[in-house]
Length: 243
Image: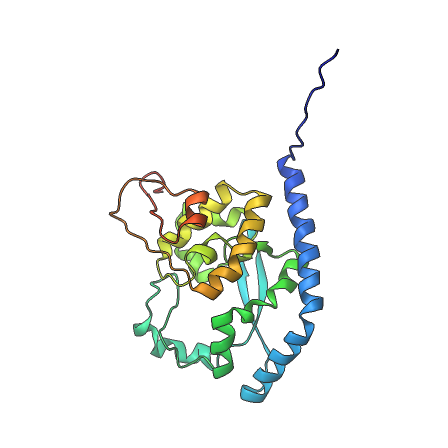
């Protein structure tokens, strides 16, 4: 009797990329349709509190250095950019990130939107346009890219995302180096299963406020995707990743 050979379906990298795009389009379309009443409520709340504009538009750097316009619900007063130089001495995010505690530029509606990440919802339109993916590194602004070294710019090798490994593990962390390591870790070990896992973990991380505790002197153990997803505290080893 002839033995029956077992076969396993393995998708090639181009096929996996196409599948990722199909998933992005289907899920983004569903979100935009199903949550359209919520969009209207948020827009009305912004309009009542501070008037127009409803959306915040900004230029961001995407895959291969391509620039695009990212969309968010406006969470700050319209003169926020003009007031920023007066507040930079309070910034806890370093040169790459702006993290000002109790930022006075943020509106009351904006605080709620930021705390719940609802201000990010319009970025599903960016996903439909092909500028972003649902899962990936956060899109960078031009100033941030100009400050990056060659190692850090590797993040531009994939589409930026609405959520990602950094958002799941280090949502409230101001450590820019940890963000870099987790973004690049996602790129190195990307899979469709990892994308689904991050999507599932994203609302849990938002609800629980999971923190990432980086300790540069905590040992030599390199972080893996399994460690990052299973434990709120992981150790990042940068010795093998210096530019």
